Length: 68
Image (cartoon, rainbow, N blue to C red; front, top):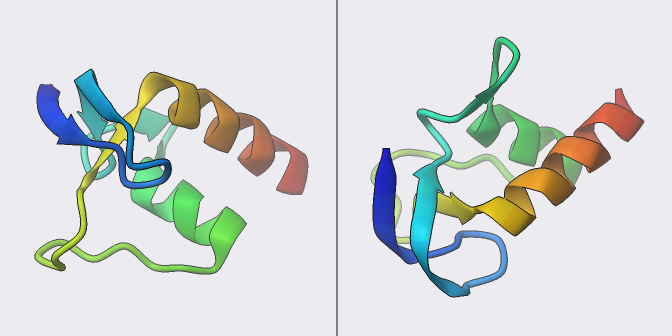
């Protein structure tokens, strides 16, 4: 789903943002990918954005693949 708002990781204001709870890389949700590479768990209902931009999505995917 495309959402307007802020990217959770870079705080960019983007028109096309993706929910970290809906977006997956294979079977892994992006909230888990971000937690794996940063050590910071994303929880639904916290006060921070729950969306990620395409550029950060690509960077997180590459970092996750490298770490795994």
